[in-house]
Image 1 (cartoon, rainbow, N blue to C red):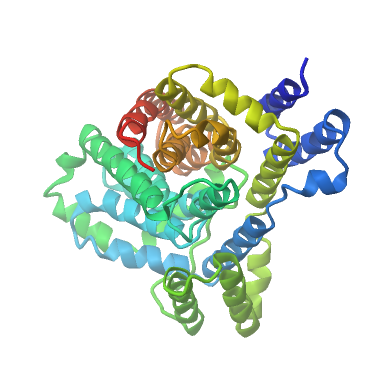
Image 2 (image 1 turned 30 degrees about the horizontal axis):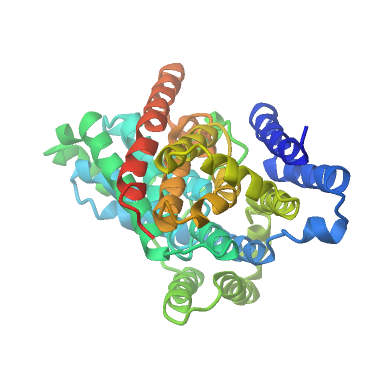
Length: 441
């Protein structure tokens, strides 16, 4: 058996173990990098660590640290309640407010599961109280998170754009962001219609109660905590979520400053975020102590581990070997759609960012031939690998399932599973048709 094939099989084993045994994929990938790099590729420690993504490590730690402070001092709760008040008695707008809110949170740097963990308990509580389909509300929250998930300062966007830059592929941050935004917006619109969103029109009496229902999250919080099955901590709403305190004002200003620094002045998102977080920590140290423990360390471990293993694959020539194998299919468009389906299927059961970190570099030799546009292919892979996070086997889907009060949990699980299966079957082909076939980039 060739060394390249062994390294690919080890990668498959990593995904299988991470999916079936709930072991962090990044930790497994570090172990695999040590084993394959040392025993198969005869690499020393420097060669193994050559692929460690130090820049992405800083981005992940910096933005999640800043967002953890926002969560600890109640800024995110304030944003949630401010958004809810905007519906002003129109119940049909509540799902769209939740869609926009989770999208805004991920767009400014929140990890997708963190945004879902914050918004889903409140959104599903409204769904239970005002007769909105929990599948509709859960899907709107998850697709909202993915809609904003590829902004230039987001976690997913930083990861994918970093990989594209490291692999010297043509890239376009705006097209990547807008592709995910448009895809999730269209899917959300279809789900809204199919799941009865149009029937919510005119329900102003219930909506009026919802618009001023600040106590709802507080009532729902104990139930959410009791039903929670995911490893992430359930959000605890502040006792004074409607007050704009000095720490919250400073945090909102910091989030705005991060956007301006990255988009206008082209500063590094990770270094800027961690600097702003340090300033806030110095001024309000109690929030800092809470926030450090909420940095997305599992995500940091996952991304750094997977990309380190991909670096080992690159060092030993596996990426070139695999890319040539895909290209030898003889039909470039067929190879492209197969990659999209692989990304969607694996991501429905494992990590979206993990599979993106593995698939994009594996497609590099195939893309370098110029037969398929790199910008469109990367966008299609990104969309295919993330829209399937509505699956109950993914972190976001599990968060939605756990946060839903007063539902038949087995029935809701089946609904999420069927819906996730439909997304896996339909979206990769649609993304391929719209983004790859026209030959973007």
